[in-house]
Image 1 (spheres, helix red, strand yellow):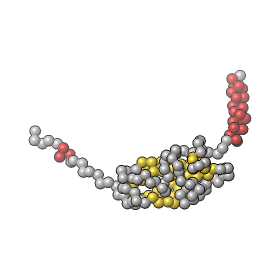
Image 2: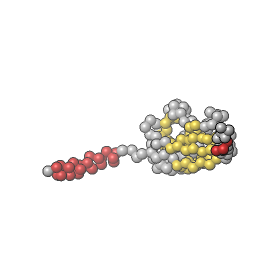
Image 3: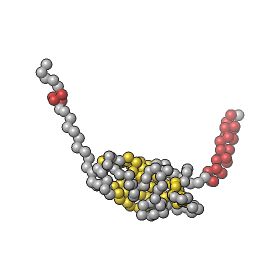
Image 4: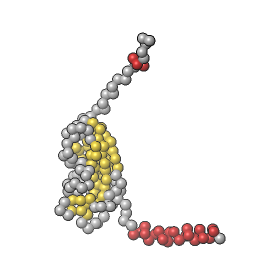
Length: 169
């Protein structure tokens, strides 16, 4: 008796789940990013893997933000966008800075102080209403990247084993 009840419940699940799944918006995918650096710059190639969609009044784009940077980094963040979602981002329809759905852009940020940088990438929908704003609930998951500008720091020499022993006991 229990088997038939379980089988009946299992067979009902797809009937209930299918209409909800069919009407759901497709998920927004995060960007694919490759990074290179030298002594004072980071070059990023950002691909927006999302399919172009017609969305009235919205632009489906991706951004790359410098989330954490070494001392001496200035607040002038373009061409890597300001990570503050409440700030006023630049125009996301500028295809030289923001990849549109299905597109790839390569941008370079010059004049960076040497050190470790953490970057965050995300795709989502933006709308214009007196300024560009990220549409609430439209963002993909965040992807994080680390890259170093300049050479790796030289490690401090560790004291040798004999140097740490007191032999005059």
